[in-house]
Each structure stands twice: as structure tokens, then as C-alpha cells.
Amino acid sequence: MTATTTATAAPGRPAPTVPPRVGIVLMSALGDVTLGLPVATSLKRARPDVTIRWVAQRGPDAIVRGHPAVDEVIPFDRHGGWRAYADVRRRLAEAPVDVVLDLQVAIKAGLVTALWPAAEKWGVDRARARDANWLFTNRKLVPEPRRHMADQFLEFARALGADPEPLDYGLAPSAAAIAWRGTAIGAAPYAVLVLASSAAHKNWFADRWAAVARHLVRERGLRVVLAGSTSDLERETAEHIAAAVGNGGVSALGSGIENLVGLLAGARLVVSPDTGPLHMAVALGRPVIGLYGSTNPRWVGPYRSDPALLVDRYGEPGEPYASSPTRRPGRMSLVTVDDVLQRVERALGAAAP
Image (cartoon, rainbow, N blue to C red):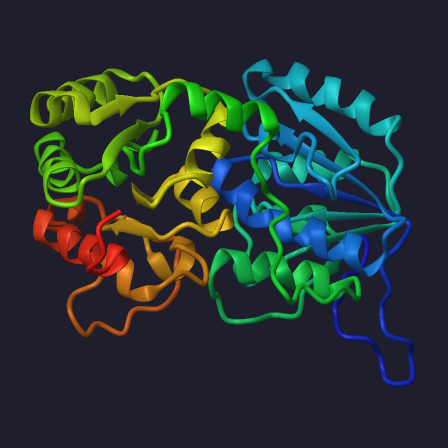
């Protein structure tokens, strides 16, 4: 196996520079891909002529497709079994790069990294990797304590000589999404409620969502727009909210990722559990109330967002827990309606919309 090296340059060697062609492997999930966008923007800012190719799964690829810093998106069909790897191998053979950045510390990303021809393949240090992902890379980031996932991603940009500051996601709504928003939502000010994640342990409860929606409509004069997929849980939650607010609510469930960007970009406020649209809303600069119980906000919380808007029930009051991907199932029940309403009032202030 090829010997590995770290991101630190030996004394007397020049500082690293962004190579002409960079491949990024960050395939899922939607929130993770969103958090990885500043890597691409910082590389492009450091070297405007760099070609950036990105491997992403169907669904999350919508965030990077058309992104101003990404030149090519190579789709990976996670439902295709081993055939998916054969298909992506053919695509990678036609998409040469000088360096591969394996941002996703998982076995599937490691296998894709192994299939991409390149002299340098960067990954995290062994302590932060999982699923033996470290075996597929020959350059390693300098070992660091685990911080926020986004901070870990930014280490890759720095390893190639790109300064990620100021942070820039490069995410913006398309003209089509803005037009759709005007038709579907209208001009009245609104708050977005992201009703669920695909992971059940992250989800909140329909009656509590309805109570928050009622407050936003009756006390704050906002419409509430419901975002998410069309799962049974989300449809049932939407019915609870509709019963509570009547025509003060609008369902945008199943509207697609492009329209979701437009929806989030125009919101006065976004309330969400730990799921992709939360990170998209942060990237778009919106005030975000994050609901965290089972997942660690120091690892995947709203990045560089107002900490006073975070509802953190992952840890006990005063608990000095560290950043970690470890889950604590069952704790979303500790997130109360009052927790959320206190943060609604902080986010919106005293003025009427």
C-alpha cells in the first residue's frame, strides 16, 4: 500500500498550491453536500482556472449541478448495487483529475475514490475515518480533534493551499425557483417549517409543530410554509398544521430541491430538525432555529449560525460534551414548544413582519 503523508509541508518546501484539476467525492446526504460547497468555492477563488469535478448521488447532486464553482457533476446511483461502481468507473476514466478529495468518510466514498485515477488522494486521518475509509487515500489531513463537519471539510481546501475565508457557499436560487415561489407562496412574509428528516430519530412531533405554526400565524402574522418530502409522516403532520392554522398555512411538500432553495431564500425564519434544508437555509443566510436531540450540534449543527437560536437537547444542561457523530436516540421528546417559541421571538424581534 502507498505510504501516506499529511498536509504539513516539510521545512524548506513551498506552500501547497491548488492543482489544475480537482475531484471531490462527497456523495450524500443533502446537508453534508451543502456543507461541502465552500471547499469548491475556496478552490475556485484561489485558482479561477481550476476544473472541479464532483461525484454525488442522485438527489444531493441537484445542489452542485449548475453551481458556479463546479465544472462537472458525476452522478452515482446508490440504488444500482455493484453496477453503480462499474458505471461510475467508466465516467471517472473520462474525467481526469490531479487530486481527489475524499470528504465523505464512508466505505462507498472510499471505493469511488479508489476508482478515480489520480496521483494524490486526500482523506482524513485514521482516527476520524470510519468504515476503513482511510485505506483508500494516500495523503492524510493533519490529525485534529473532531470539530464541526464543515470545519473538517475546510481542512481539505487549506491542504491544497486555498484560504476558505471568507466563507462562501455560492448557493443562490435560480430565476425559475424565484418565479415558482411567487406563484406558489405569494408576496406575504412567511416562515418555513421543515417537517421531518428521512431518519426517524431526528424528527419532532405533529402536535408540537401545529402549536408553533399557530403562534407564527396568530401572534406574528406570518404565513407558514411546510417544506419536505411527501412521506406519510409529513403529510400527516401537514394535516395537523392545516387544522390549526387554516389558510395561514401553505404546503410545499415535494416541490423539489431547486424550488426548495428559492423557498428557503425568501423566508423570514426557518425552523427545522437536523436535515438537509436546515443547512441549505444557513447557507442562504436565513435565521434558523435548529431542533437537536438525537444528533450532536457540535458536529452537525447550524454552522456559524446564531447559537441563541439553537435548541440543544443532545446534552444535559451544562454538559461539556465534545463534537461526535454518536447519536442519542429518544431525546427529541425533550424539545418543547416553549423552547421553540422563545427562539422564534428572539429571531423575529418586537417588530411585526
